[in-house]
Image 1: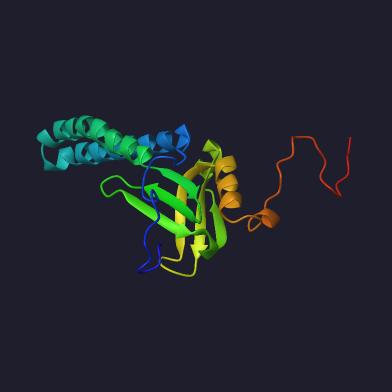
Image 2: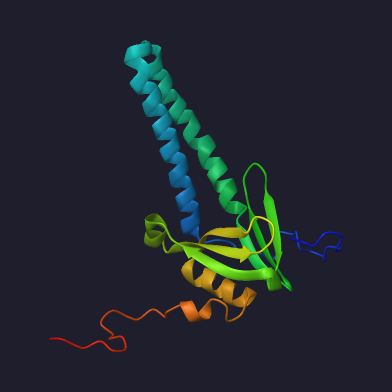
Length: 182
């Protein structure tokens, strides 16, 4: 975050110039929205026999109405994702109802956390967390591609993450110290 009393630099809070997230991030948000709509419909329809016949119909109508509404919110959440390095700062944008912008001084980042759920691995995404000694302690950039996230970490704080990253090897290429067996 900006230090108290410090004048903000021009354009730090603008959306322009921030890198967008990959389409896989949109698919993840749309999938969550549709799963939520289906679960809500199933719960109401499942309660129908106990609560009366109208709840069965109400459940499916609710699901049909919720699906486009939640999908619109998911698209808005995706559209508001963004990140970038702006001079001495790292800017992160996210949110749907309340759009949030986090601006961190790059020299205040003391570490990175890289996490990947099984679903993120399958989609080629990761969550990159900028660790600081101030504020919330860690600021996450969710659903960024692996290449994009690692490049951002290197651009924001050069050589901090590099010792912990192994380059990908093509299948069938031996690593140092391994033996070939036929």
